[in-house]
Image (cartoon, rainbow, N blue to C red; front, side):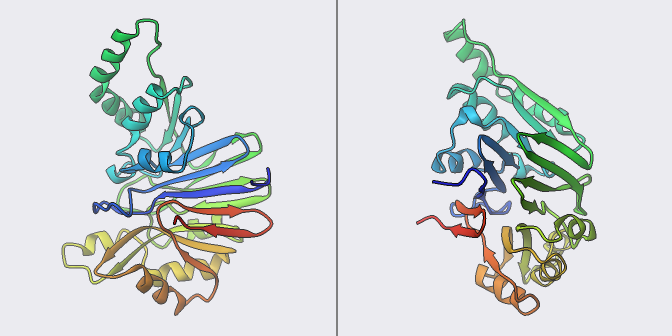
Length: 279
């Protein structure tokens, strides 16, 4: 049982474009009261939602950090299977410019599936989605929950990080980013900062990937500047390194509380911050 004031953060997917059964594509769920907000929808997101026992009917709000495939491959799954399993409300997808065209293309690919199901149940209404192409600023404010989008530097533009404020609690999701002063300004003093990371001996071809993300040493500088009560790593991009290596490199610069996120890790943000890992 959770207090109504508790904000629950579930790391549904903490992986990278590299295929992994242990770490699915980037996807984070924020819950407080009856509000459920999904940030990104990477590969395997629907499976993790089922494992987290999230009712499909209640999942209608999706926010995209940017339009790289590893952050949105599960959107057609959420759109169609959510409808099949009982969602009647529209799926609201908010993201940067290009989101509407992307969703149109994705839904077109699953239209034969939708048509066959409507044919077998003629009285059924087709699934509905809505897209909103957002700019930095407040993008959601409802039931005491406010979501702010802010620009972050990445290899694609625009790309967003998000700050979520609810019940006096605050969570920041970095999205995919290099070291960012804008991120620091939005994350100062937050309860939880969920940050991406890249680490390891990258090849010449992989250096381009490394240059678009944040190393543990750079992330440690961000943590030192923002002083979150808890810093958590997600969206791990590792080149021959381990999760323990990332934490060790971080702690050489930053001595605050740092956790390595895993899929289905739950962070309960209340009077205290509790981290529960899957068995």
